Length: 377
Image 1 (cartoon, one colour):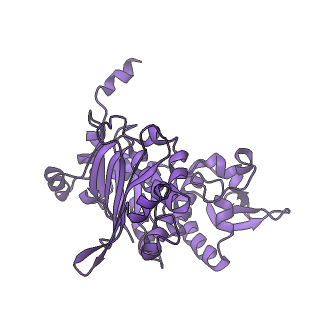
Image 2: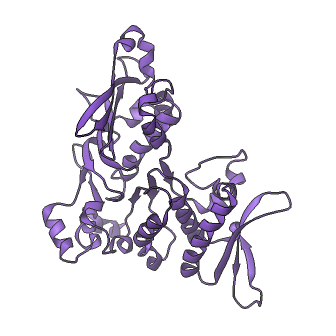
Image 3: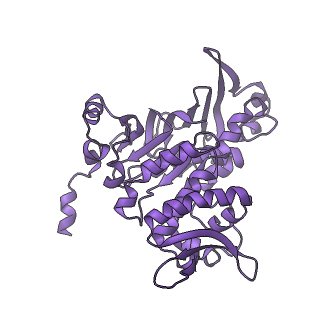
């Protein structure tokens, strides 16, 4: 399943967004233009599904932190998705006057049957009128209420965000003594790899080892080992001047090695949308240029269903890949009425059809105005 359309109203720095999506999307724009906030709208629905509406709002600092700052006459927030052109889910939420507890203003679920959309949930309903407390919860988060669209619940629960911080992978206990699961920054990366069933783990690591061997000199034999206390570690053998090579574990891997390893593992890890923040960090430009192709090849090699990828990036090298289509780009542009999200226009599409790349055609439009003034600092 993939998200084919995203609509946002009054979400963070987006007043009104309505865009189509494919299975691979690259988000570009100036710093602080809202690329991470765009991804966070998808994560928000995951958190609503896995926890509850109030918890998802609290994680982000409350309604004031997530409501578009210039929302006045219509302050409610809407996140609406179309999935596989088979499901539509819309959640509009807000607060009552003088209160901070978020409540459901509108929740709608539609399913396509043949050529028609059938509404299978519409809130508020009579039960909400009889018990206003029900509006503090979405039907999505309630097992007894989402039975008719459990497929959506399962899909939202698989959404993953990854922005690996190498230092957290090397020393997870230094930052969090208690165990952490599904950490977007990598504190549980080694444990999550180690707990994967052995046959699946070995097959994935073999593919990752082949990719890393091409990117990291003398890198080979990636595997999971355990120390005397039974704790798992990633271990490789570097072939160099020693006859038998030298074994090293993740605590001495370079930043680039850890980020690339984590990125490749994430591509295999689940079925739902994968949200990647600037995967080019710490990587050589030559490796970065290959990432779009790696995404495509690994996706084709997956035994599971297609995995949708959203990538935020500033990288000229990554966006110079001629295989990136004009329909795979969302360009964010800050404006007086919130951030605008542009797909490629007709002229941009024509230029790319003639052989120019996203880096040639669309990336220059993300350059901040008056950037030359920075050199005067």
